[in-house]
Length: 434
Ligand SMILES: Cc1cc2nc3c(=O)[nH]c(=O)nc-3n(C[C@H](O)[C@H](O)[C@H](O)COP(=O)(O)OP(=O)(O)OC[C@H]3O[C@@H](n4cnc5c(N)ncnc54)[C@H](O)[C@@H]3O)c2cc1C
Image 1 (cartoon, rainbow, N blue to C red):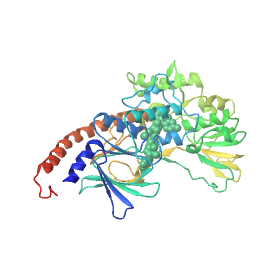
Image 2: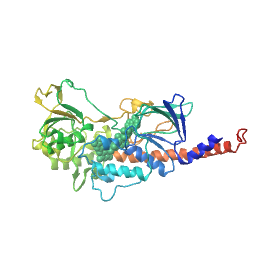
Image 3: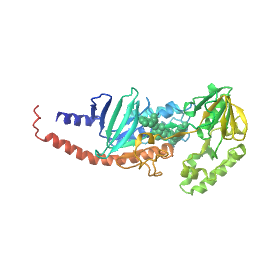
């Protein structure tokens, strides 16, 4: 009975209310009465905040030692939000009014830190979730995490929110001769600034937003970048007709069909940037918005790279055939010397590596199988936030929906929980005097 009183007391203040050491002491078990959120990036924080606002306590597990580790640890110095700030706000708290339209990385991190403080979100850092499985007999999720010291913890919870992100692991392509190349090969997640590449010939592989921006950064630091373009790509100006291209597109889509908006965007782009195919950047057959909707492929928003390609400061190259000691051979038969290679080859979800569940998440790409806007909810109390391919706007929508859904169950179950606990506490018990 003392134990129950203790649990009830703890439950009132603490989302983690049973902590039991395993006899072997290398594993411990923690019961979480509310939802367990995996990942303390913007998505995890947004969900925890929305839950908190509804009176539902949650526990957040994070593998690194800080919130928003993607932004704090894996992005380059010159990074700003790609989209205007009004499209990147998390629920319940806006950006400070004195922030610029496109906040710099540190401002975004400051905002997230303030957000976590505002909603009193204190993630359990250095806890990497290695496995999560639904125990149908118990009716609970069993989530195993490993700390930096190798110590394991098993969390048992009714609701599991996957917030590990679309960018959990760097994608490293296999290239012939990779082991042979004598210079530095690194993914953009490890690139900070062009400063260390000053005067060097650098090959950037991949022409998404990151690859384009890294090229520009290298130019600004007097390095000599070349850009490998293997695929077609839509490059649009970041602003057109006095508005952000993204904002304008969202506004036009309220009234016009997507294909019409795409055509309009491409005409204005052509007037502003000219024919990008002439500088080696062929456009896909589908328009930028339709392509984004169908494949999730984001158009590049130009922040100055194109001018450097036109001036010849950035050279466009075809696909790589193989790497040599200090050179790269391309599929067109040409070979050029390079001192370093930056892989702007993107990221992938890591969900299949730890979540033992096949219905909601695809094993192939680690995204929810059901497309936006229906991918946020699975069976048995499983949720996904931030896998919409729609950036922070998608995150906010998911977080609100998840919190509303869990709140309903939480309130319903709380009545039963309280009644059950009260009945146990009121029962005359033979051991109550002991
Ligand atoms: C360079 C760059 C610029 C971007 N700019 C914009 C922009 O301007 N606007 C926009 O809307 N979107 C932008 N995005 C998209 C970006 O994905 C979101 O901004 C945002 O970071 C997504 O948040 P998230 O919480 O879903 O994922 P993340 O920020 O990746 O956070 C996931 C967290 O989960 C943790 N984690 C992963 N696996 C585990 C595990 N097994 N156990 C415990 N913790 C784990 C990670 O350490 C990480 O902290 C950008 C992305 C990049 C890479």
